[in-house]
Image (cartoon, rainbow, N blue to C red; front, side, top):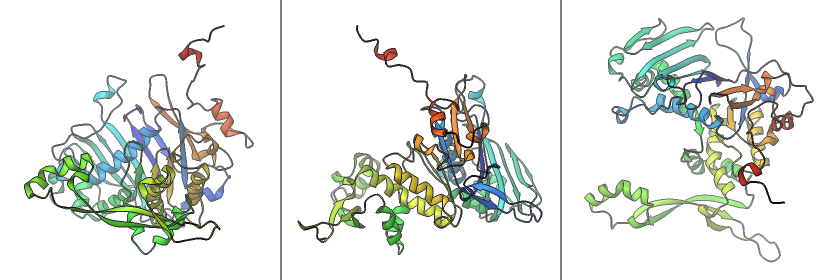
Length: 432
């Protein structure tokens, strides 16, 4: 579970901003939260944690940049120790609209719970190297230092069992945590497991729907198909069919990538085995009697059905594993009822017994309502006078219990809406 996530000097975020999933004191929608009991802390009160959070704001306000930050941190943890990254600069993007920020490192920190232990992990990096890195944990209630790295200097706490030589094996542009996990350090592997479960989808990085394909081929495919039928109840079945392609049939980017290897092997003339996704829809006669299902290339399905296929696997994965799912523009290509169903799936203890969490950016003002969310679940992003994104929640405002959140939001009472003028300012005034 995620407790909070912070970032600083990353894309449009100049100063530190924190998204917290700890619920406030509001008593509305008790089913939208779960309670985490800290390990080893007998007297500690259970911590109320949100099951979902929605991000609102104007275009270019910083919603997607916050989601990019989740993705950047995940990729750094999972991949920075790989040899393929040895000579590559760190692909970090600092705040550009201030001369000092351009030369300062980007900082990120995540506080989360894995296997009932609360961790606080973070780093500061620039394009050249990891400047700072730290890991703290509270396995027995009180937080303890595991390690703090400053450049090439390491300070280890007594609870972190050291493995000889790991510091020397850690490159300047690699995270020590990633290297330690690569050498099977138990604490590092546990932290790595949390980041591996974190799924991030944003518009500039469409992930291959590996979880959807895996579920389609496993015994629980019936549950996956039921989920897909929420978008189109005429889907009778789905399958992956083996096909043969020639080299010229491959997409241009794929051909360019493998052309040299296939030319050396003399295999350009050979057929390439692949598989394509096919859906089957029921057909009906003139009297409405159901007939045998008819195959349809999945590429010809509606945009909404294709979007749901991309999401279905990672949604079910998150629900099964109690992990965190972060999605940009959740409502894109989906009917509002479908979007609400996905959110309800995370809020329901029946469909979400493992306390998975959903964080999503949206422009669906219909969801910005006390009918669906607590005030501390509704987050907004706006840019201040110097172009830096600021993150805050509706719980930061004095809001009446009977207020119309959506109407007040569109009126600009909470900020984070575009300042759109009259059409005449762009197109000129019409003639008399």
